[in-house]
Structures are given as structure tokens and as C-alpha cells.
Length: 105
Image 1: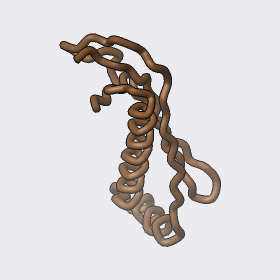
Image 2: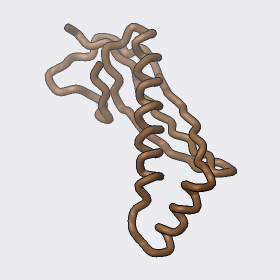
Image 3: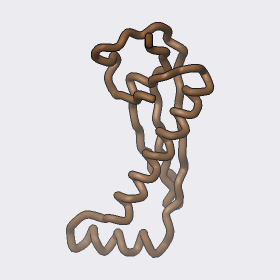
């Protein structure tokens, strides 16, 4: 399945717009990771543990969105947007949204 942030796909014609699809994931952080990330923040540098958690959340949210699009009969998702939010108690949320479409074969 084609998944893109653009509103069209070069060389492809959209046959039908099927509607909005989204995938939401809430991930928890743990005390050890938070402690190590705070040390990284103090001394500078990148927090690899949080970066990998963000990547994991993004991938899971996109996979959930694609699954919903397939169930609608789509073969592509266009206009994809990713949002990340920090929730209370070290929780974070990743949301992937887009428009499910059927492309001409």
C-alpha cells in the first residue's frame, strides 16, 4: 500500500476517496528511561531511548492506519500527518491520520 504525505501520487489517478483514517498509539515510558534521558538532557546530546520509542510509536500508528484503510478497500493513503503528544505520567501518544483512497490500476 502506498502511504504518502502528499495529496496526490505522481503517475497515479485517484478513482475514489474512501474517507478519513487514523491510527492512535499510546506508549508508556519508564523510570529508568526517564532518568537516563534527564542525564542526557543535562550533559547534552540526543536521547536514543526516546528517539527509538518515538520511532516505534510512529510505526505502530501508521500500521494501524493502513490496516483500517485496507478494511475500507483502499490501496493508498494520502495526505498523511503525524502528531505526537506528551500525556501525564510519562505517557506519549502518536496519531497518524490520512485519507484512504482507491487508485486506478
